[in-house]
Image (cartoon, rainbow, N blue to C red; front, side, top):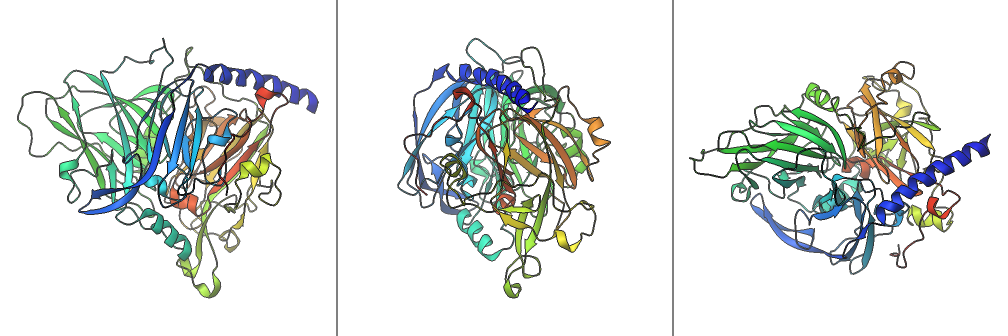
Length: 567
């Protein structure tokens, strides 16, 4: 029986991977050279050096077509170890170029270089790239635009023009020193001093008005905004004054169009948004501000939509009246509940109906006691985040090499399918035995092409006031359900959307709630999963999957590149 099931999985997986191979064989683009270096930037009335790619903040935009293959040569002339991740790019059979530090590669040390082979397959729309080593992604990030294949078009009218809109964080201090100091002390990290739009804070901050980002539009034309949340620790609301938004894509896949006054976008997510310049010629703010968390930057970044033509410009652009307040949970739910996959004949989806592996994963921020209560966390403890009560410890050799070369003692394969304790996860008071997580480098092994369901359950252990954007490398998954409170295994699955759930790579787990995803483990390799609030990831809200090889070359990991950086 098991052999029969395994053979069925092999055949299905081979068919899917053949699709990947056909896609990636279409075109290899010319190589791109990137130099990581310290560059002086002035924001908020002061100057400092930040780590950049080719001197740019945000970094350069990559333009590709669906199924392309790209080589990016990265030379590190900075002061810190760095890696680059291609967020939302599945990298079929190629975890070697996925990028997370000490998970799929050892870092690119100062003075060293590494060539990434970026393989696109089924993705189409907006993705992004960013550093995946400590907090260097605060300034090392940029858009990826994946156009349809040659001869294909969008499933909507072609826009007159398009604009990447990269939302990010600005810290007056050195971001690497901020996180290193926090990790040494064990307490909270400093919040950012500003949010930025395409590198600029906007009019509402000191010394920022001259640099405010502007887009120029012609009345009556339609435009595509490619919005990316690369902010370090805040999910945000985003709106454009007096202009409706039509969301048509998310995380590199198309969705049923959503007409809305605002969006809610978590760190890690991308959204493709159509906007028509149909208002009286003037200046209008686009604005983004946080949806409240425990520690958050409660400032507002702005850019300006400026109509082309002859008219009297206002002294101040119009501000979006529909931009929700920080604590408007209803606004979050009202938007996210409307997201559905396009699920058309040309853009089909394939939601696993039968599940082979089920995981119930609790998401928690706890604390570990320190000797003599000497740390900066609650009651002298050290903050530690966890998944199923396991706080991830970064290994000394990357997991992928350890797995591929069978190096023992680096990780264990006992990541639990369920939490060690079952309790009222969202209660106001918690039992003492759930406050302290264990630590370890634990992975979950998946059979090739098995279907996987994960229920993420938020907890109220130290605080539940944050949405957790959970990101999975190497896959897109289907978000089939979510809700508030404790997940009910008998009643909640009855409400799952198995018809047109969005196919995404980052899901926001509601504050004190749950979210369920499904995916097919058809991509062999080692793949990281983590919270995209960087402070939580730094505290250990991470784990990794090992997807086993199939029995053929096309269902197995590719061989490693000739050059791998030493640890």
